[in-house]
Amino acid sequence: MAYRRRSSIQMQAATETVAVAPASSTAERPAKPRTRMMRQYDLVERVRSYNPDTNEDLLNRAYVYAMKAHGTQTRASGDPYFSHPLEVAAILTNLKLDDATIVAALLHDTIEDTEATRAEIDHVFGHEIGALVEGLTKLKRLELVSREAKQAENLRKLLLAIADDVRVLLIKLADRLHNMRTMEFMPPASRRRIAEETLDIYAPLAGRMGMQEMREELEDLSFFVLDPEAYAVVKQRLDSLAERNRNLIGEIETQLSKNLQKNGITARVFGRRKQPFSIWTKMERKSVGFEQLSDIYGFRVILDDVGACYRALGIVHTTWPVVPGRFKDYISTPKQNDYRSIHTTVIGPGKQRVELQIRTEEMNQIAEFGIAAHAFYKEARARRMSG
Ligand code: MN
Image 1 (cartoon, helix red, strand yellow):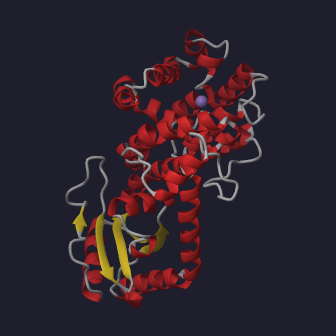
Image 2: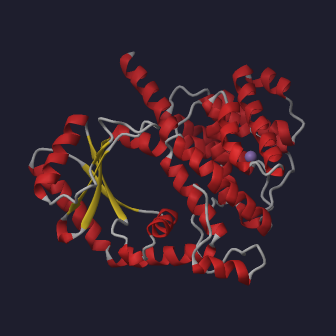
Image 3: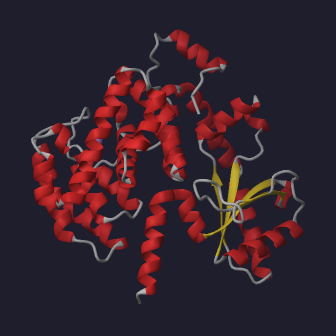
């Protein structure tokens, strides 16, 4: 989805400033970067928390190797350069990825930016990790070439073609996410170019890989840079609405779980507010104002198994009137990126339109973390089977 500047707010911003809109100091940033650099021990702990069989020695060696290789290099913020690959690795531990991916993340800028070579990395860390790091190096060079040739629209296809190991793309996305989170010290022109590229290429790529959480954060960070005024307006409205509806959400959550409980179904129910960028594109797409958007809150109903999903659906539909045309069953017919869930909208407690996503925990993980979650569940299943 291309980002088009159409609204009056945006036009104004474009004429008042020359080509580049500075980040507004009034708008609150979408995400705050971590302030303290993570220690070696913290990283190992993070990995061990989801992978008890992690090769700690390997992680430790990669930490030290990358730290030494980047030496005294610094980032635009003045932070040691090494803080970047370290944070990229940390993002990937949230996706519970394997040792090779975490190690390659620590090393991902070494071939390009330090004295390190592919041969040396192969020698020290093995061929698998060497190949991952070289994949990242290739992507970075490709990015520079297509940027100069203004072929951004082809970059996404090229990315997919060149990365024969999906872990390379996962590291690339985490790399982009960390750069987007920490771009405030960059010159405004590069900030803008990188945000456009993120919105055009990397956010859709994350979506295609089924990683909704990553996609949303990339979109919001880009939106904040490209159109700080619009971002601030939507964010402020979302915040005041959240303030006004604070009790309502809890009430709907309680009512939903109570109704299911009464029918012998245990569910985890939680309300989830949409992000500024998705609200904004919806307003543009439908040409409506903020007040006319009815589905600013979505509710997740997480159940133990598929049978419980359909029983919960039956209970919801017999308790509250259904809004026509909103029912979709992606459990029986998954989306192409393997997304599975039941969607429906009802006129729920308090006569509120309530958008529901009904799914199992595994489906929920796959909806949020996509390809990364697949690998994790496959491993967990194998572990269960082997005892
Ligand atoms: Mn990097």
